[in-house]
Image 1: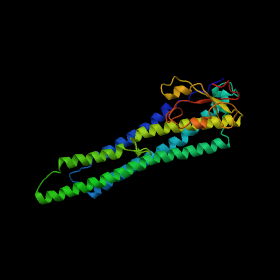
Image 2: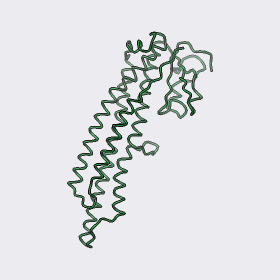
Image 3: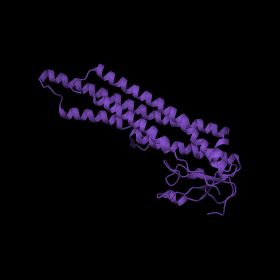
Image 4: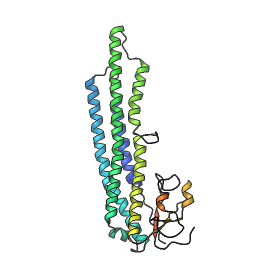
Length: 278
């Protein structure tokens, strides 16, 4: 059996994560420059305009990243299948002849759309939270200045100032809240999403190409996993549910906590004839 080369997209993922990290730093710096002791609506509007500009640039960068890198991951999946089934002698040769069939083209389009939607949700949430925090900061500053005009105090209360600054910082640090209520920093969430989606594109393309070539089984890769993934390493699986034999269906394993979870590094090498049940 030939194993599908395990994909490595670390460099590409690190680049897009660094873009989010840098953008969040720039937004934080912009908010920290606000004079909370004497804020005006004009200053707040100028700061928000700069935040929107940064996020718009980030959305454009992430869209370009997604449309460039997810098709690469899918092509690697197709090429891996061609190599694993012995159609080409090397992976490099397989990659030269790899093309998307109709189902893979539709799959890639769908994964691109899903990933772009996930990444847009991060920036939209940051913008919404920053706007709310800046509005509150402006209101707090104006109230403090009105009070100063009445009682002669010349500084905003330190507790109020610290609280406002914390809310401004939190508005940037919480990029998304998932369905389980977990709060993610933008760069951490982007790292998870891009890793998961590139592997999803790779896996789906692998399966689609294998089934198109009458290979209905696969073997899960080994890399010495320490979590529950280790229980599945080297196991034979069905790529379609109605394939003969006492093997688990791959679709039932994906998306769980044990194997093929988010950030999982395992791949499947297609085979036409399964070994004995294991």
